[in-house]
Image (tube, rainbow, N blue to C red):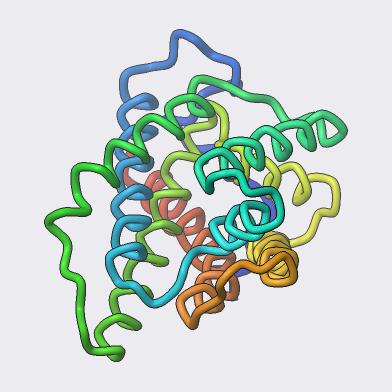
Length: 219
């Protein structure tokens, strides 16, 4: 299916011509911010669902277990390590790389207190699925803006460009690898973790496809 076989970040009429652009069009910046906000809301839904940490949180938790550093510190160091991996992949940053951390954090902080925290495991799973979908759709919006990806998304797009494999396959491989290493280091894995690991790749591919489809027909 075309929905899950996207092989590159589409370029649409409102995409920036280059990632390192400090004077983007208002429309491009608008879609970047909306995408990151939706991404953050999706992350908050995953946290509130309580069905399991995301793969990268599991990895940070694992590093925390063996180093005695806080998860906040290991999360920051992990992000730095991922950025170092950008160098051989020739991945370019932009203002979106910075806004990724800022806007997503704000969206999580503001929305989390108002989101449901279901006791039913069935509802937890449903909320997790919806959260994964929102993260995927938000990723599609902000990545197509082409103003620079976040650390982990940059690793995904860099590896995709090098391997020429579908985005869904590359992202899934990254997340599964992260989960395995995190679990081996002592991180806690739940059903939501596995759902995210196997679902976020197709969700991002779907987001890219849908945003591209509607943008090239309505703008």
